[in-house]
Amino acid sequence: MALDEFNSIPVKKKPPANGKKTELPAKPAKNHQPSATNGKGAPHPPPVEPASRTDPLTEADRMAAKQREISVSEFFLKNRHLLGFDNAKKALLTTIKEAVDNSLDACEEAKILPDVFIEVKQLQEDRFAVVVEDNGPGVVREQIPKIFGKLLYGSKFHSMKQSRGQQGIGISAAGMYGQLTTGVSTKITSRISAKKPAHYFEIQIDTNRNVPTILKDEVVEWDRPHGTRVEIELEAKYQKGRHSVEDYVRQTVIANPHVTLTNISPMGEKEEYKPASRQLPMAPREIKPHPHGVELGILMKMLKSTTSRKIKAFLSRDFARVSSRVAGAILKAAEISETARPKAIAHAEADKLYRAINATKLMKPPTDCLSPIGEGALLQGIKKNVEADFYTAVTRPPSVYRGNPFQIEVALAYGGKLPAEELVDLMRFANRVPLLYQQSACAITKSVLQTSWKNYGVEQSKGALPGGPLLIAVHMASVWVPFTSESKEAIASYPEIIHEIKLGLQECGRRLDAFIRKGRREAEALRKKDYIRSYLPHIGIGLREILRFKQTDEQKVLGLLTDILEKSRV
View 1 (tube, rainbow, N blue to C red):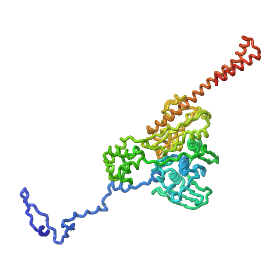
View 2: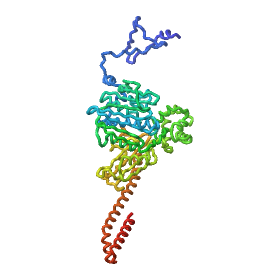
View 3: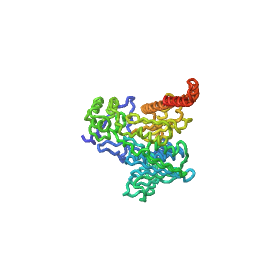
């Protein structure tokens, strides 16, 4: 039956229950335009009328109009205290530290003994220019604007090996602070080879988009065959004493005894530090992540991005310490087929896989990704810069927190010219970098406080650092140091880290106690010897009177008694 014929059949309506006649709606006029159909005769729903321009805006509309994306540069521009630019004095030190870290990392990666030059020039009462120059491998021209003019750009964030920098923020943030406080661009000169020209850039950061703005790009003459020079003008404050540039430089050469470093102050005072060692640190090797250090969300992301076609190959190739046999055991516990495609693993299966991984006993991650200072080099650095009577150092075996390998080193210096009436001089290092601020929030400080120094012959008040002529240096080497903030000034208090630090402190403490006890015994022996020596003339007189010695015999007896006294007290 045709559709038109079907529509023409009259439909008999039932009367309503109340007996009243129901009025049908009026038929449309003949000239009324029928609604559009979907091609099958069914009408479309009537079109929705657009909201009138006169309709009042709701509060949600007003709030939505204010929403916009924030670039990372814009965020840190308003929160620069997170990066270590809290105040003018700290800003100067942070700028130097970030530039020196980059120089040392670059030199060591290129197997070059670092020669670093630092100069601070005072331009006005509150304005300084910081110059840091090195003999490193230089920076390729195309990379210079991104490294110095873009936050969160670098090569170390995804690399599982020890390095000073981690986030790709430091030197670009220093340039951004200089731009904010003085409006002056960061000036960079770099050369990668004696056969290549040196390139000079002046760069600012477009904080709205987190991209570099190049104001000048030139080829210049430079006497260095290779290296990089950075100059940043900033609002700052220069002071000596604790937390000063000189204090930072002194600690840097202690933790890096292979470095040649020259520092020129705003007053023209020049400090030159010659290397205590001519041997480069052992180069760390990059490792793969350890399964016990990966959280569920990261595991799911790795499953989606892996190039492995089978889940078993994914586990054994993309992780450290997972052999083919261990991968099979993990998949069996998770009830997942060994031939399953990693990209096809759903959330529920990934959760089971994550639980199976953490329930499986695995070897600790490899430790060739670390480059500790070493007991000998650490002692060389301290002896060259600290005058004391006793030195000792210990390097703990590698350990692990959250799947990340780390190693603790502790060194002590006691006596000599160290101040006896003050609290201990505590030096904190992370990947060879001095930590000068937020001491009370650091795991190193908490470990020192929790160690009972009275057991080792050192005075200590309750809840305070030990006192006396004592220097303590603690270094943490790790593929990922758990800093408490982006400014990298304090180490987070993981139980595994505190435990290792305390073991290192206790080992050095026992050696210090043996030295102090030996010194006390020697002092007591010397006191007794002096006491006996004072009575020897009287003994000689008494022997002469009793045995009727001659004067010459008396002198012979006194000489013999003196020799016996010296030999018995050696």
